Image 1 (cartoon, rainbow, N blue to C red):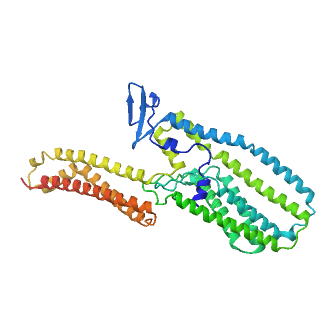
Image 2 (cartoon, rainbow, N blue to C red):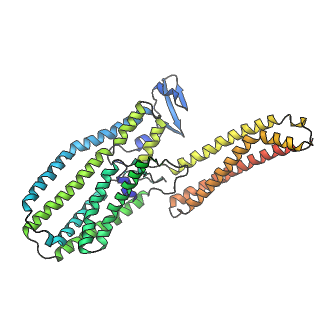
Image 3 (tube, rainbow, N blue to C red):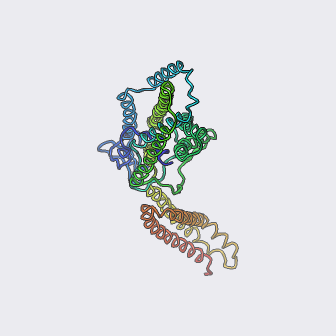
Length: 435
């Protein structure tokens, strides 16, 4: 499923994503001064937007998007096969088939479905041999999102077209492993496209959660191993279909010609759909380029979108963002606590026997600090539950290694929050104590 998600999310052409996702230290135009977190160099009249140690450069991002678009255009020109050529070939084959309408292919239907399924398994094997993008050794979340799928209706057609040979095979020859295995890929694509269509109809976006579900991309080693296993299954299915062809009765020459034309027609339609889908797969680069040029999004947001599409969010980045939020809340808590102490300077003017009034004064003075403390306690509790969920993925050595550092950081911040809680308690007790 992860392989299918990669196929239907990220185009395989264009420069590698690290050209943008690394640490960029080039300047951008001065008109980005309105973006928060800017450092300006008067010598070079440049500005840089800092995001968690990464510098988002507007020109670098625009160059990346345009290079990706140019790479797709070059690939289309080099191979010389465009959509119109494919449609012309489909038309010629369809016209040729009209002269064979009298051929009885139904009596050789078993042979036909064996040939169709064999060709589809070889097609999927060739697709499996194509380079895979977005696989890294570092721990990253699975980056497939339903609302990022380009042309879901076109993908639905492709999934149904891939389901056709397995369905015919099962209907004519009965259930078998080969047809069921090949059918899983078409079914997976159909499910993905339906989810994407439903998400668009209801207008819901699958925004990145604070703590994403612990589903991570596979390591390069696991990706290669999985491809070898699946590729061996494709070859096995093809071999079984060839064996089935040989076991059937002899087929007339005219029937073989018709079958060859039908198989060619099937594969050409499949290639045409994929070609059209490939042209749509870079549509997001044009949309993002427009948003950047009209300042609808900042460079750091654009960089995050590119990283998410190409690689997926890093676990370390998500965790750093969480702990940075805790740091900010602790700083705000310190300020609120000092304000509380200043507000309680005059509490001794209230007689000690007026307990209700003194308590109300203390509660009002420490309301902000208590609210922040409650938020931080909930945050650390939520993070503890997330660590438990990550613990279920410990079979992945990368997760086990990351959890050791995350557990240490959790204990450190837990101690800081406990210290803040103790400081607030001291302020409250000191204010309520009789003088």
